[in-house]
Length: 288
Image (cartoon, rainbow, N blue to C red; front, side, top):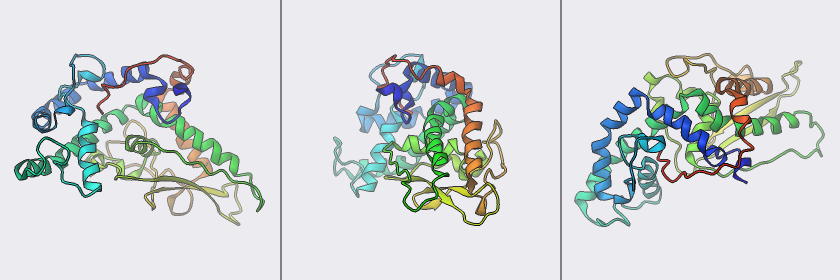
């Protein structure tokens, strides 16, 4: 059931996630910055009316002042761009050059604002832990179990997950991807490209002479991802590398430490005690 889905925290624990998001949304910084995007939201909704919320209140997900579904807005641009379609395609303004130009001008602003909003979610340790720690714990346990497999005929686990871009982004924040650290570096604008893949590979290093005989190689669309230690200052400046393996890759113990640190920051007992709940909630107003 949904309560057993490690990838989708909003299905697993809807009430708790709504509360955690509400805490972020109610902050003064969020209200001011998101409110400043209201004119952009209004222009988008004039062309794409389906983005507007059907109802608006002052609690939970709907407390954000900008008033549109930013995930759907960004998906509009990303999907059409990936498939080589006009941005006005399948709207009431197809083949209207003026509208096409308007949408083109708003694309970058829209995607940047969504990335900023998700950075606010993932700067909250408890919220990040509830999203990223369960799948990372599952991956970690599978990889650690495989470190003892040394025979050529031993079967190694090969697991494929299908998920959304926001899940990939959460996992990257969860492992402390170095390109996301530091607000001043502009990494907060990052958004996973269309059809991205995130790979966790267990690689055995022969003849190390130590207990660290394996590293966990993380690849985003084929490119290696380095992890840095993250704490409450993770998004404020430079951080030390978390990996002690070759090329600063995470050795097996490093990866365990990263997952354990994430669980600790978010209060592991906080979400673990609720994972068995069968409470259901309406996530239709979740707008990123």
